[in-house]
Image (cartoon, rainbow, N blue to C red):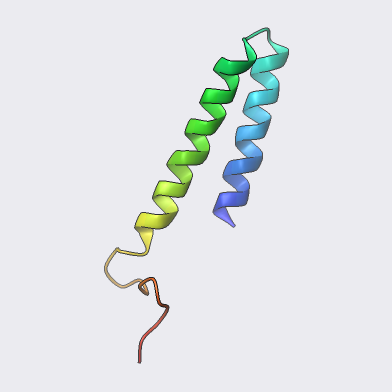
Length: 59
């Protein structure tokens, strides 16, 4: 769910920056950075103690 929030937020940031006159490549790189950071955080959260691993909960 957090990834969809990050993608939506990055799209809104891109749209606002583009509307304010930023070059489209600058706004795109900022939006891509937001998405990449959220993906990295989502992927690394599964390795924290007390969280299920990549294969799901083990019994």
